[in-house]
Length: 399
Figure 1: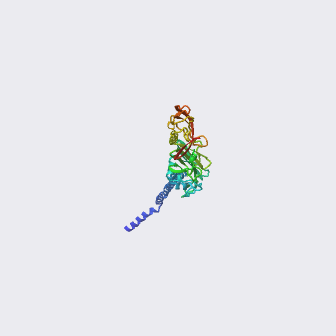
Figure 2 (figure 1 turned 180 degrees about the horizontal axis):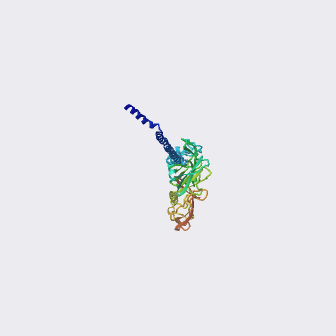
Figure 3 (figure 1 turned 90 degrees about the vertical axis):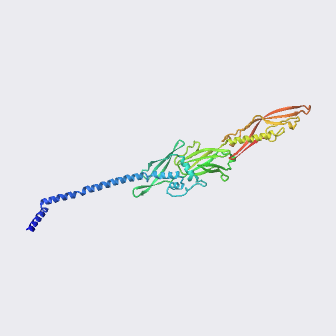
């Protein structure tokens, strides 16, 4: 009996699982389980959309910074600023190849493409600003503008950067188009003819560079330069000097031909930086010391007509030689024309106007009378002048 009740109980207990109400209950439970995946897929989809959006933002950010045209130019500028000429040359080659710039004219110096001269030339540009210019319509290339201020004047250089593909499907790959190497010819202006055979060594961005040598027919030296850069040169010697002159080497804009520092032709790769030579104060000092020695050599002679001198005295009377005394009125000073001087020869001394004084005893040949005579004789002394960096020669012209 208990087993029958147990069976009945079991049967009753199992029956609801199969009736309608049990089925609805089961169906309700099933419906709840069936709707659960809907919200889960929504969350997954939303997360993926956020991830793609974030990824898109990240890609755009990376493309605008690390993989941007500006980044290529910034790397190039960083290499120049650090004096790493080899890296800068490779970036400026247009194909990433290292080595020296190709097709340099014979004799072109590469001193300004490396080390301290390069660092000095970049430092003179001051703070650099890098900005993106216009892209080509198809987006294959972009302009990058670099701005800087030198001596209060604004300058800029424009670079072209070309798109060469993509890395990892998303990141743009850029490469600088070839940057033409500029040639800067540093030359002495107003060079005295006698100094044209050298040597004459100038300071160019801190290095010593010979501008005049016996081997070179034309004074000056040509340097290879990667823009942007400032080339600064000066010259200092005992008798010749040139104040520092600057030339801003831009990629697209030439230097103003009217400026004192130098001239350029915007349509050419060659630029000229002229060093305007001037005499140092030592030239005038040396000329007058040599003039004093010359005149002293004249006044020391106990004769009426000193040899090689601009003064003299004629008489028919007898003159005791010991009574002859020559002197100069005042202190004659020669005046040296500044460079550049007028005329074909830039080395000129102004004619010297002076007066010689002769004191002597004169004995009349007929009467024997002796008298003291003081003779004053004005004269004009012209002279030739030669000046080299380390020598001055004053040469009076006396008939």
